Length: 151
Image 1 (spheres, rainbow, N blue to C red):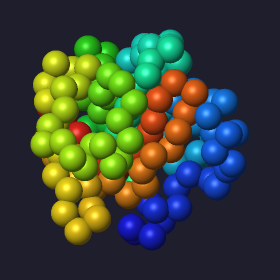
Image 2 (image 1 turned 90 degrees about the horizontal axis):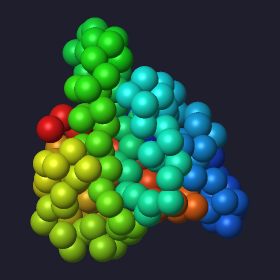
Image 3 (image 1 turned 120 degrees about the vertical axis):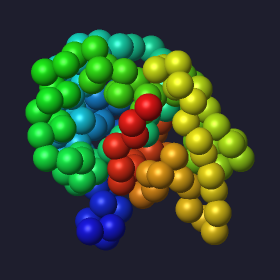
């Protein structure tokens, strides 16, 4: 499963990636269908297409699949709760992995901090492992994680 998660974002030239914003990059990657649907349902597309910069800890479809059965469907019907969970995956500013690894925590757009730990080359955001880091976009950076963060 981890091998599949590591190769989530199609290889592209960094300059090409930087031309697309966070939302377009997630859409083109193909393994963030649930995240993109959630961002749309929560009405956050325009915000994440904004100037930023933003740092997004993006859970894969496999990460959403690990949630208890019915959780995603329930969240898609509760726009306010969904928006809070999604904002918990976003930090203001462009925080590259090397910088994140030096932090102990970061404040999210959900007004709740995330815990950051780094050990032996692995960066953890709460209990989520960063499986691909530093995907540069025109308005920030995406770090792919293997677990949905719940505030």
